[in-house]
Length: 289
Picture 1 (cartoon, rainbow, N blue to C red):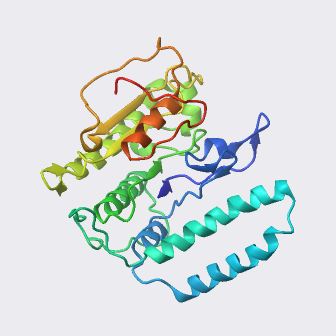
Picture 2 (spheres, rainbow, N blue to C red; picture 1 turned 120 degrees about the vertical axis):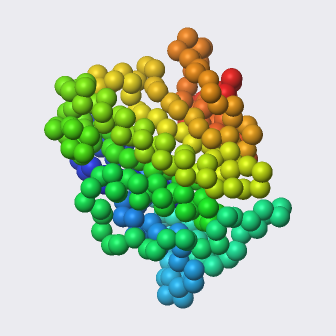
């Protein structure tokens, strides 16, 4: 599940597509995963209980056309076409799973259906209400086992949001460069949203553990300061990852040789049962976590 609280920014900056500052989930190095910013549509996507026959017919028709079209494509076009087909197969899988109950090894999710009504259409006018609602959707998705992986991007790297609720007057991006005191207040608001999600997860019992105990949460920024410092990135890991993550520590990897964020990603994926030889620019797990 890929959620966001600010829509993608189109265009270029210094010759680089702004898509790279608007997405944190990618299906390929050049293809971002669609980010859902509307709470009601995110809810519908997760909790639609009956497969739609029209959806099945559309997917079947697309796949049938794809079989005949694939043979007529060049090598480069075929690669892009396969990326597109991957999205179609993901939709096909979601349709097949709709309405199916989840049970593995005697474990059952704490909810079999959402315990709150569908959100209203549109986007809440106030940022605190909006972000809290998106956190609640992540919580519901995990409680119902509708998905076990979620990303939630509160804002874009060059965010144009204004956090008047936190006393800020300028847009977030501009404020990060010129208003350090206001930025502190806004960062505290970001952290309060994280704390809210963790507290709600800690209240959900799963056997002798909690949902938070069984989850690994990574909270981070793409830079350290508004001066575009990406040498030392602040990263917070929360939860227990099913007993794999030991919290209550501060780890400094500034002087570690070959330190890479992708090493952390490899470790997180391994905790989730995904064994990869490499990811991005790394072939090693991050040690010490």
